[in-house]
Length: 577
Image 1: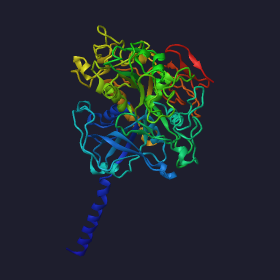
Image 2: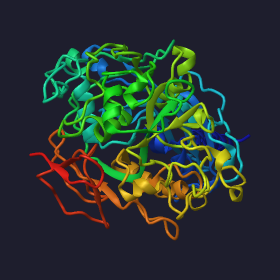
Image 3: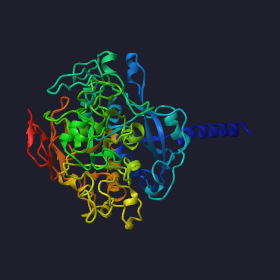
Image 4: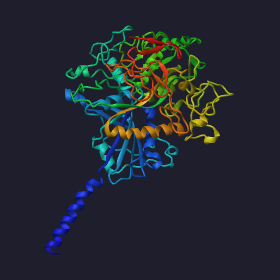
C-alpha cells in the first residue's frame, strides 16, 4: 500500500470510529415520575401501536419492569445521603439512529412533584438492568406485542445514573403537594384543629423551610409503612416550586401545569366479616373511623365488630385528595385522618376497637384490604384512586367491594344490583369491576371503549355531573422542550382513556366521542400562590377539596375570596378569607 493510500485508509477508519458513538447516542424526550393513575395510558400514547408519537421514527418499542431507583441526591449538598424511592417503569424508544426515549417511573404524586422541582432533578437509575416484566398486557399495546430489551445506549441511561426527571405526573396541584410536604415536615400543632403541622419535622407547624436552613429542617423523619414485613418509606425532603431550591440554592425555572383528566377516589373494603354488608358511608361515619374515634363496624351503623382502617402517607396525592374532599374540609369542619396519630411511626394502632395502619403507596393500601382478614382476622377499609389496574387484585370478588358516598356511586350510574345497571358493571352491587365484567361486544377484555361500559356512552357519570365529591384532576407539570413533548403524550393518553381502558375522564374533548371534563374545583391561595380559576388551562393556587364548579371552557380570571368547601355536592360554597 502506498503512503497516500495508507493515509487515506487511516483517515477513513478514524472517521468511522468517530461516528460510531453518535450512532449509539439517545435523546430523552419526556422523563416522567409520579402518579399511578396515568402510568398505563401515557405508555400507550408514547408507543401508539408501534407508530410512535409525532416526530419519532417508527417502529417504536416498549419495555416495563419493577423497582427502578428514583434518586434525590440533594441532601448530599448538606452532608446527608441520597434518598431513594422505588418505582415501576415503562420505557418506549423509537428506531432513529439516535433513539428518542420516553420514560415513566410510577411512584406517588408527591414524590413526582418533588423530583421534578428538585434542582438538580431526581434521576431514574438501576445497577443491573432487569429482564422485561411485561407489566402492561400485550393486548393493550395495539399490536399484541410483548416487551423487548432496550439497546445498549438506552440501558446506559439507567445504569449510568444520568437520566433526569423532566416532568411530574401528579393528581394534586404542585402547590398542594408542597403544602402536604411542609405540613408533614413540621412540628405537631397549629391551625384551628391543631394539625397544621403533623410532627415529622423540626420546622414551625405548617411552615416550609427555605434555602439556608439546616439539614434537620430540610429533611424530616421518614414516614414508615405498617404493612407486615414492608420496608417502604415516604421521604420528607423539602422542595420549592419557585425561587431557589432549599437544598442547593439553584434557581427553579417556571413550570406549566397541564390538565390530563379526572379520577374518583373510592373507599374499598373487605367483605367477609364485620363489614360484609357495608355498601354506603356518610362523611360523618368515615370521620369517626378514619379519625380514630372508633375502629368498629358500629361506626357505620352495623353490628359491633372490630375493623381495621388503612391510611395513606401524608405527602401522598391520594391521601390529600381524600383528606380535603372527604375529611379535613378547608373550613376545618371535618376531621383529619391524622387526628390522634401524634406522629406514631409507623402508625399501627391509635383507635378504639380495631386499629389504624399506615400504608405507603396505592399497592400497599390495596394489599392491606386484600389481606385484612389474613393479617388481622377482621375486615378492613381503605381508599384509592380508581383505575382498573389499581383495584385488579380485589376486583370481581364477593369478598371485597367499594362504597357509595352518601348514596352516590363514584364509578357507575347506580350501585345495582341489576337490572338497569351499566353494561360493564358487576351484577353484584358494589363489587369492583374488571375485564371479566366487560360486555360481550368487547370479548370480555380490554381494549374496550367507555361507550360500551357505561349507559349514555360516557365514563364516571356521577363525577361528571358534580354529584360525587371525591375526585381530583390529574396533571402533568413540565417546561421547555419536555413540556412540548409531554403535551403530545397528554393528547394521546386522553384518547386511550376513552377508547382502550377508561380509567379517567379526559380533561379535553376527544373528537367524536367524549366532550371532556365540564368541571373544575375552585382554587385558593396555597403556599403563597394566589388563586386563578380558569378551567383546564392557566389555573393557579391550591384546589384540593375546592368547590365543584361547572365550566364551559373558562371560569373567570381570578378569585381572591376563594370558595373552599361545600357541606355536600351542589350546596353553597363556604367563603374563607
